[in-house]
Image (cartoon, rainbow, N blue to C red; front, top):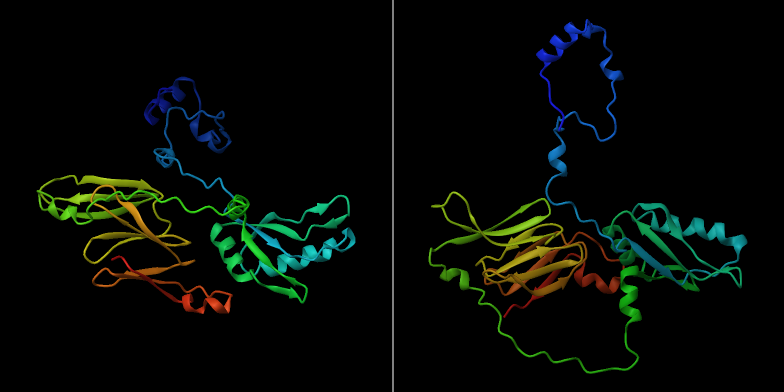
Length: 294
């Protein structure tokens, strides 16, 4: 690391070299790439510690099927219609629409890929436009591209599900038997969520369980402390245990905003302001009662 000089030392060196510092254009001074003269930037701590984990999958891309099959001369017209529908739901990335051609026939293949800025927008686009009627002959079938592998891997022949042997889980109330009589609390900082023991006699809390990217929104204890719920864009998940926090159940409710447990911890209610496009889904429009834990 280069030696750092104080301002007094710089003035003394300038006087020795007969340099007038007041005449120096400081804005014209540029450091070589990677050079910092041994002075760490105030923002350097932002680059320390764990790096952010970016989603390397295709969660922001949807596949729209049952589009009209058109020749090249009508491609521009169709390319203008599709973004008008889907840009009302979210922001489509630049060059985020791809409509493939059949080289043999010179026509489109009847489907396209659309990439949004966020997975939430893609999920909402699927929910809003799956079953959308463009005209009498074309009703959209929309899927997340991440779901394609799941559909492609469905076996041709049915096989009975594997019966897994029962393995007893951790006693969900075992934390109540703590010899020090401590409670547990949960905190979130950045992308990390951590459960710790609360002991007023200790300066530093004892860690219990830590997990990065455990939730995309927030976490919440059940009233009696038996369960810990995490909230995600697809729904909610319920976890339990004194030290392991295994996932016990998960419930699908897109764009869920709020959750709450019943006082006896038998039910979980989720709330979302998102309106589903399918009238058959009106029973989960706002609330979704999720039960039961016992």
